[in-house]
Image 1 (cartoon, rainbow, N blue to C red):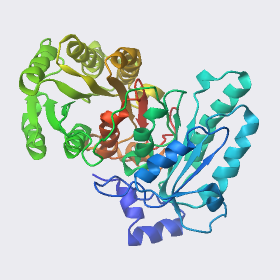
Image 2 (cartoon, rainbow, N blue to C red; image 1 turned 120 degrees about the horizontal axis):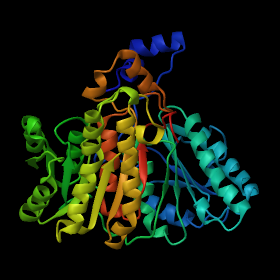
Image 3 (cartoon, helix red, strand yellow; image 1 turned 180 degrees about the vertical axis):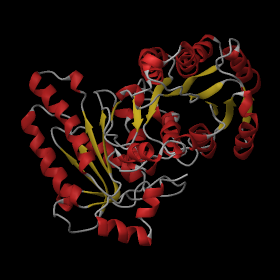
Length: 451
């Protein structure tokens, strides 16, 4: 499925009509295709503050075959080759006065940014600041990046990565993700890294080769897209869904060469059955994606207990129970495993008529944050992905007005696709993402709702 208005606005007649009526014309986003270059143009790398990461960033980019230009080359308004990305190393800020250098570098460079370009800012976490002035400068970077993301046009995005002292070795994989087509619908987001043992020599084409990945709710929509992307990246996928979706589940598993497992994740014996299946047939799981979720919408004052309890059971309690069972059983979860939990924009911003759903999805974020230190002790990670408005069969059934408002109220002016969520989950599942733990990544095109 695709965003009909984006497709229309970029057609011959659509371009004419939108220009004549002054309507917005969202562009077709640059999405990842296997074998394509990391970026469609050169990158300019600059610094504000001490900039301890600039050399490391340049090395990663050049190793990926990207041409890196100096800030002097970038300075020149719209002259010269269009840039694929702009990267600012803002580590080492000491106070607000240092931010002028960020402006001086970014303003001319962004003028040369091509369509679906990337702006990425690397900074120190505000929480680690040594003085109020330093904390102010570091926090200012957040406002800077979120505002740039709202100013960019033509499918370009802006994001930031907080890199604490000691976490420099975790940067390569997040850097490549945010610059690539995998992050097409991730915009205005801030990610914090942690120090980790990051493996080297990862196969860029098949980063999940040899891995066993479990995906719940895999029979359709976002779940099916996750299964497909995981398989594309080399994983053997155990696709899980309820027995009533058995035919669709089998079709998905067959198409990707995976395994279908019919399982009601809310059943009392579901955690044990899943653990036994993984240990006996696959030798444990490398990746677990808690994607299964339901809605039972109603205003809180009109909501019956069944609606509340069912949503909590599927969206939150099942994730807790299954993850705990995997942790408690030797060999069920590999030491360097990746667990990714699907939350929602509603769990961050709330949504009218979805108190049960929003509460369950907010609970997922709390669960991930609390479990992260325990996972780190095992050399594993647990993270959450929070989709915004994603175009699926379910959202296609919404009233037209509601659907269109949901699609447009973001900086990219379009709804996301299931593959956008899948790409982010697949990236978090990679061995190279070892330094991303306890984080929630919104895949929402920088929705105007929430942070």
